[in-house]
Image 1 (spheres, rainbow, N blue to C red):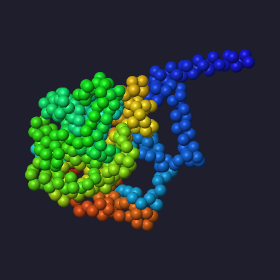
Image 2: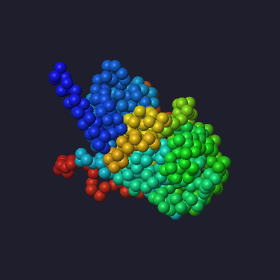
Image 3: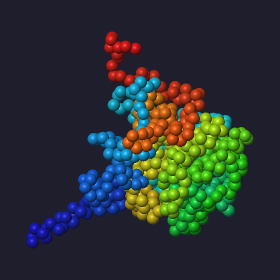
Image 4: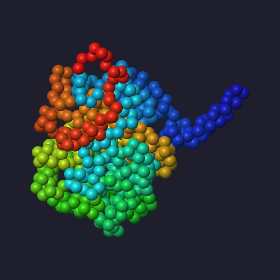
Length: 524
């Protein structure tokens, strides 16, 4: 009994010390927010493979991101070993729709042999954004991988800060999302400013769009392009409501709305009502700001895209870029029927839109951006083969800064402080540390895309053609990607001039390939 009486205080002191350490440390947001208790998650994670193997689920059974996919993002963000051993546990032979990337034995591009090759790769866009339409501030994006639109309000200030600092470190763009340009977006990362239906950040006191406020905003921030949001994959044709209880003074100032009152995003834009007036507005914004202007949309009925492409071809007005969001994309909150069943998945939606532009001979004049689980190398490679020039990453970027796929985004109780406005939970996320992890993930994804491109014999993922990918029909058959989606020869690639320039930019001065010179008996 004496021993027990002494042990209890000792245990209490040890637990208190552990709790204090958890509260002070900055590496793990979960432990800062839930000291001691949060450690149970890491214990369960450590024995997770054994539990899943015999009791629960396999590594590829969880959704929206499997455990293998999350593990790859986490390890990449922390610069840990992100390789996998013992071969794939994907059911390749019996999975119709599974993509296979075809490497070349003697390709034009020769992969470097050094172990660290590709870690600091420069991977710019193969097209110059805004050049085709002569925009004053046209530019070549420095990264083909960029951060998707996620608003302050949906994500915490600390999460936005981490992503913006990470974008600056990785040399990529961050989309503001439709919630406006907050102070947390001003940490060095360059921006794409998104214009949603409520015109947050550039609206007057009556809620109407204000061109003067937009011009003042972009003049005072590193905004490189404007994106008009028509819809997103997870909730197309829906507006939004941020309850008044969540509209803090910071959010109110960022969005230009009254604090403490319900913040409504309409389902439609007030500045245009058809394709013709949309293009008028696009040209107005481009002329007044000098910035490239694009649209973001999910894909449903193709009539809109047919009319848009016809007007662009016949009138000379047009968008500089098109961002296609797949129905498998994420969102903070949406009705189940919309997340599950409304709007086409990325590959089908994007290929249909690309075909429309290609049939109107516009595909080389527009920069195509893809979104919807494209932050994973295999999905991204297929997107590039189909004609994407860049990809946007959303939930994968959230995973890199600590998201554990708790799927509490809509409850304001995100345990890692990513998708919440709860001050206590948000404090657990250290922006300085997590920004480095976001940058590590972005750099690793670019490295893997470069390695696959080189395996396919080309210098850049944007040069991977549809002939480099086949889609399995099952164990005994497969179909080339261009036949699956009805592409003609040459579709999916930049113009010859853009191809030549990106090859020049990607070709190193030092020869690639072997670690030693060929022997005297080498042939050829």
